[in-house]
Image 1 (tube, rainbow, N blue to C red):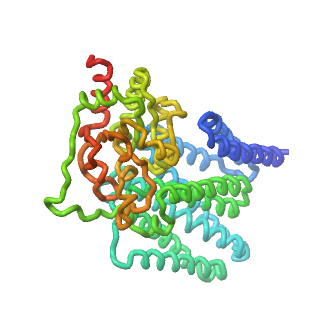
Image 2: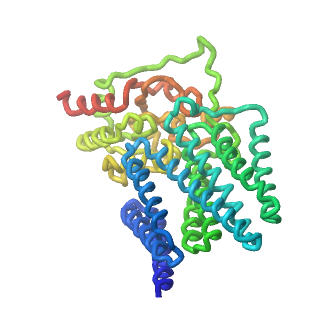
Image 3: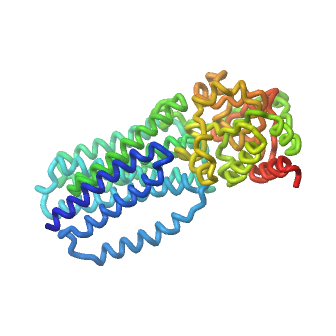
Length: 464
């Protein structure tokens, strides 16, 4: 009877996981999707706790207490830290998979070599490699996003880097094959396999720049899901296999979509050292930059009939999303058509700008995807760029030698006028200057995005 209830809980959890993923396709059902995912995980945990195989509740209670102690503070991070918090979650998932695979290997090794069948060993090797490389890779991604002092956001490269990385991976895979064929006699290879996986996770991420972090995070999410699939086979748990497959496939599909949005391949993201700082123009070649005051910019916005706002990571850092929403409301009250142009890789994680604007209660129908807004940009009176850099850089269109050459961008430079809010003229994560900022129809508003937007709102309200 108990086993039937457990299987029923697992079946219901599987259905809810699938529905949660489906409901995430539409903002109107996104809340329902979150509730379904929480319910699914609760059923999965409850079903597992009722398993007759559990004989010691002390270790489980201790693990739950540690999980709560770590998880609750992580839930309090500011919205700007969600990307690195997501990366840390992936790290924990990878570590869990790696530790389970390690424990099962040594448990079965102690019980007798006959338990380490080729199928089991294949699952353990996949779980350990994917789990541990996800752990260290995700920690590196989180550190880059958090701007940890001793881990540079720029790509870290050295001679023959790709050859070294691929060589390490090949050695790890070779060791894994050897363990599958002879798991007991070659047991000394197992800790070496773990060390190689941990090292590969670090070396995989350090040559990747901050501009590629959205793709890297979704790819690491895929790795975590695949390690969960392998863990499901090791533990003979069908729910883990299903949930991991959903996680892994959705992360992979999202990564493919984002690579297409950047007109780049997986190999270019993983091995291209995108974000390497480029050589600036020679002295004397710098083009003049035109600046504008908040008072002048407010007058321009007041006279406009059509305004497009392009949010970027600078908006997130300044936590200016509520001011952006307030500015849009003020303009719409004055009869201005205001919409938000969203680039697929703006920010530091998939959907970063959507999350920020949703938190500020910007109507979702005001958010327009890049491909839909670009044909309309020549008719836009004012394009207001807030903290975005590489995703509006015209070099992507006209300079094939640029690191972002060929990457689809939001055509901010084709609007009748562009106002760009930025702290300074420092380049973005691609490490190159932005020709938009020196274009004839662009005016810069230097300063913290939140403060500048506050001044714009004040001027639009009549200077009160």
